[in-house]
Image (cartoon, rainbow, N blue to C red; front, side, top):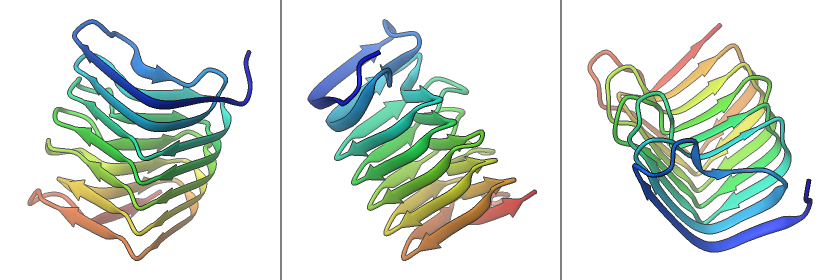
Length: 169
């Protein structure tokens, strides 16, 4: 595959036409100034990828169980000044399954439906969240992860059964 590929100043409006993701990181090293709106897919997703920067971008999804952003087994992921919003039954952003060395700064992650979180970190290591905003029925949920650091960030639970921060496992 290709390496050191950058995408900048792109707009993807998939409506119902896109079925997997607005952006599937395959060989990309940077996604900057992207605007992705999908109704039947992930906004952006990766699996088993190393060294990715996502900056100044907006990802919006409404598909149940397809978060606006999903990074699975990501290594050395840097997210900055970006927005991840899910208006249906899913999380805004998920850092998933053995991801490590992830930094999220000056970003906003939002979920809208009970049982979901603006940001969810599952079984991942060395995740740092700084100067960010996680908002939803639960603000942030951490499951089975180690070395997660949160600094100068706002975590808000809008649901009566939700948590601003829930760390478990």
